[in-house]
Length: 122
Length: 195
Picture (tube, chains in turn purple, blue):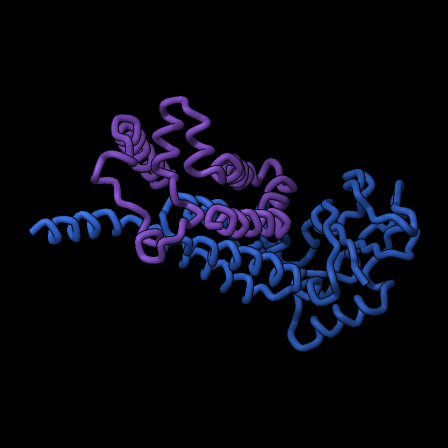
């Protein structure tokens, strides 16, 4: 329990720092946000490319910007939140947990990731 | 053939014969499969009886012998052509997992475990998060391994599922670590180029 609390504290602190950074600086202009290594190496956009700019846009209330920079976040973030919620509520809602970790959801995640990667590069 | 069983007053299933091998199945465990009009005990299903006898034969299995268990027919037992959906009324369910009288007390099962065997974590949430946040598409590999956890576990391959789970975790950590290392490495490269 104490370890968990410590962990949560660290995660929260890192999150606050990152949110502040991404709020103040625009990754498409500021130089110190690293570009995606896969993009740099291959020239192709990976499924996570644009997330930094999308976070900046989101923090400024620009939802259109989120879709513009990385549209998969619109599906991916709620999905991740739902999965983590189901993991935390496993005791209480075992069926929800089982579903969120089932191969249907996994296949869905794999398909949208691959499809998104192909789509954004053609 | 798929089987449903009642453990701890909770209906679970469907299981294949292979998967049931992993469970502390007893002769008195209530079982249902398609074609039956009501719940029966495992000893009345030939395949399961031989499975249990096979299991308890080589070593002294504490579950081999069971105390008397009332065997009243289930009310609201599933019909032959439908799969049981709802948990049976706790009051009606035969007491299968009460403390066996006169035997060593059975280990209290952790509620997160399905009768002693816990499905290994798929790490799916982390895998997707890593794919979207860590600037490296390595998380996709973790998503594939997540699927392996379920497929193997459902097949009864507990060890394999555990391995897939570990692989998924490994790829996520790899993705996160490389993603985090990338920032200082990139800055360093930039500085070297400037020189």
